Image (cartoon, rainbow, N blue to C red; front, side):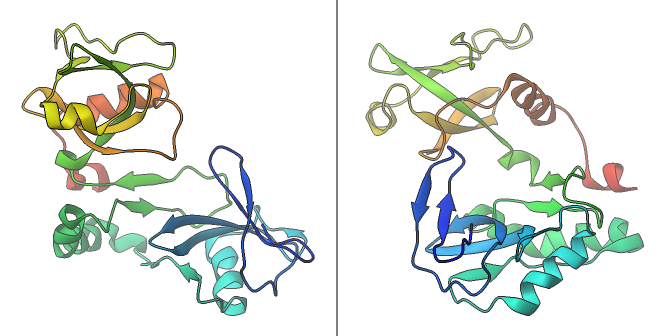
Length: 225
């Protein structure tokens, strides 16, 4: 958020933190992701006191790329796909596979060229799809995967799925009540990394949608074509 004389970073917890960034765009709100000391900008909500959320995505992002030159603000890579998405996207993903596994690419966002509130989709390889759970630690070797209402995640087709046995090393790595990102492999959840930016598990509908994707057979070509 760029005000008349200050710049604030607003977290997902709605915490305001003043930052030292050149302020040549007062009255502007950018949608960003903070990664390795840089703000990667992927959308613009307000630009110089004007609400531009109703404009097309290409117009919104062009206002940013043409007017903002700060070294701390980096525009996310934009790759127009158009009618060739069915062919181009799978080819692009094959070239980027190593970046998914190396960890510097979390996913590919498919954004329509419409207003800010249009539905967007995120793609990542099925084996790397994940769910964020708040955990409760028990017995020195067990994580309970909690829903937002405090109940343990359960599915009839996978008995005991919300009770995860871990090594002593992994057990010590996380605190009870913390949020952890889990992947699903060999019919069990595996902790991947802590999520200190979050205070609670994913919402139930997100968990169920992701779990359906984690346990079903699908291909990107089937979705696009």
